[in-house]
Length: 318
Image 1 (cartoon, rainbow, N blue to C red):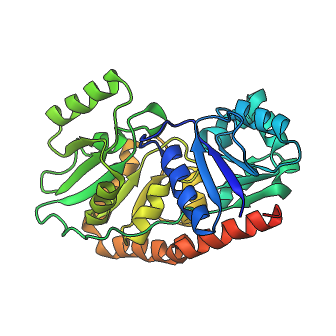
Image 2 (cartoon, rainbow, N blue to C red):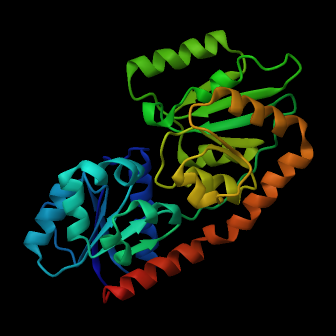
Image 3 (cartoon, one colour):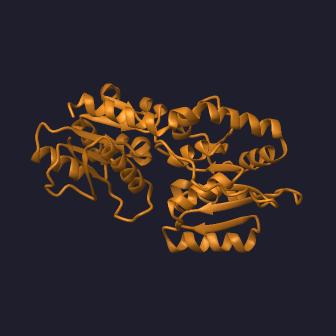
C-alpha cells in the first residue's frame, strides 16, 4: 500500500474539471488499496508518490516534492492548457516534464504534441464514466442539445447558442447549457443570450450527478472548445448513449477518432448550425454518429481505467 498525494490547483468543493478528475482518481486509487490525499500544493506531506495535475500550475509542488523526496516517483497529468499551450513555451511546465517519472495523457492524439524525448515515459489513461442512476425521459417538445462547460474563453461557450439564432422556425432544437460563469461579464452575456434567444437556457453550475442526468436526457452533447486535454464530459455522453458534436480539436479526435463524422471547425458557427440541423432531421446521419460513439464506449469502463492505473503504478514499483 502506497501513500499517494494528488496535487491539483482547483480548491476543495470546486466543480472545476481538475478537481473532479483528482477526486475520481483518489477513489480509484483507494479501491486499489492505496492511501490517497488531495491538496492544492505540496506542503511536506509524507508520500511515496506525487500525482500532479497541470504541469505549469503545479510546477512548484513538483519541484518541492522532488527536492524533499529525491528518488520518489512523480506522475504529471497533462491538461489541455498544458498540452496545447504551456509545454511549448513555459519554462516551469517544461521542467515539470523533465522531472516527471511518468506523464499521463487523457487521450492518444496528444502524444504527437509532446517532445519526442518525453514520449517513451508517457501513458494514455482515458477517463471512465458511469451512466446516471436515474434516467430522465427526453423532452417531448424539443430536440435538446446539452453544452457542459464553464463559461470561459477557451470553451468558446456561446458558440452553440449563436448557431441556434437563425434556425428555421419549425426546428425544435434547444440548448441546455451547464457550467459556472467565471466572470461577471460572462454571466451577463449568458443572461443576455437567454433574453434574446428563446432556444438557449443557461442553468449555471450544477452538481455532477445532475449534469450526468441532463446529458443523458439530451439528444446531443456539443463540445465547442478551442482546446481540451480529453474532456470527461465526452465519456459521460458516450456511456449514456448520447452522440457528440465537437469542434475539430486534438482532445476530441483522440477520444472519438479522426474519421468521426460529427466535427466542425473551431469557431465556425455555420458548420455547427448545419450539423445540428442534420442531426435533428436526418435520422440515418444521427444514428451513424451514435454507432461511431458506441464503438468507443468499451474503452471508457471503470475496469479499463483501473487496470491502466494499476499497470502504471506497477511500472513505478508501487
